[in-house]
Every structure is written in C-alpha cells, then in structure tokens.
Amino acid sequence: MMDFVGMMRRGLLVLMLVCGAALPVSAQPQPTLPQSDLVIETSKGPQKFRVELADTDATRSRGMMGRRSMPPDAGMLFDFGQELPATFWMKNTLIPLDMLFIRADGTILNIHQRAIPHDETGISSAGPVRGVLELNGGTASRLGIRPGDRVRHAIFGSSTATKR
Image 1: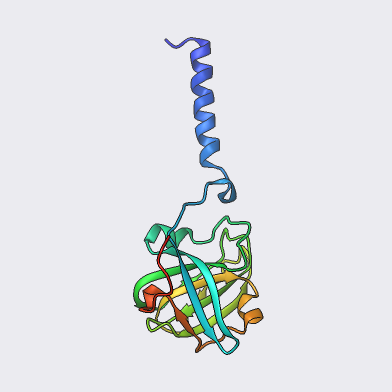
Image 2 (image 1 turned 90 degrees about the vertical axis):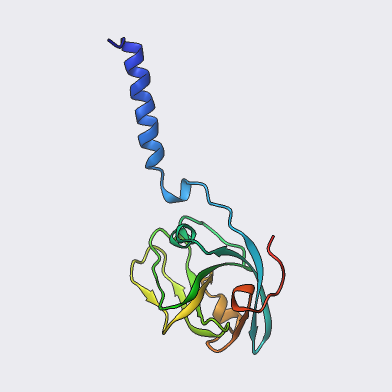
C-alpha cells in the first residue's frame, strides 16, 4: 500500500505530465529545420530570402504554427517532392502570411496574400505545384512579387547557395 507522501508525489507527476502535454503550440519548442538561400526574380530585380525547408510530413504539418514572428528576409519552403494540388490553412498560425504556390520549374503559379492568423479556411493552389513558399504577410505586394516570377532554389533545379 502506498503511503500519503507517495500518493502525492505520483499525483504531482501525473499533473505535470498532463499540463506539459496541454501547453499551447506557442509555448512548445520549435524544431530546427535545414536552411538555404532562395531568390525570386521579379521585375524589380532579385529578392533574396533565407528559408527553412519543410520536406517531411511532420515538418509540413507543423509549418509556421506557433511562431510569433519571422525576420523580413526569411520564409518557409514546403517541398512536396512532386507536383500536386496543395491546400493550406492558418490554424494555430499566429502571424499573417503570403503563400506563393510554385510549379516544379520554379514559376510562381498563384499567390495568396495576407492569410489571416487562425483562419481554418482552405487556401489552395490554382493547379499542381512542387512547393509553397510562406513569407511574412504583405511581402509579395511590397516587393512586387507576382505570378509568373521565377524562384531559384535547389528543389526547382536552380541552386542559389548551399544548405547550412
């Protein structure tokens, strides 16, 4: 039979485990993803970004969830490994994002600007895409990034630099 102190310790351990599992997404540590350089060729000239690469089911599912900020020259590139229709949502995402849907040849197919945090409405590509680039909301408009512009990155067969 367990004594009172033993029962209290066990109860405290269970409470700590339950509370830890219930931490909000923003309080949980962010995984470290591979980073690489990416360039978008626009009519205003090349626009350079440092992007995290989400190329597994787990990293694509997590995406930008729980992040409170992102540097202005940063982004997250989702690589599907092949062209397919893509749909995203903003559940548990805390910052507005621009989503650039990119074909396998690096051409931007369509852009969804300023996706609303926490919105569970699906945001879809206009056709099959190899990847999606998420940038801070308003970046595409501010830098003049448009459908038809070219993205240079290793997943599109046009490397700009090596991974770090």
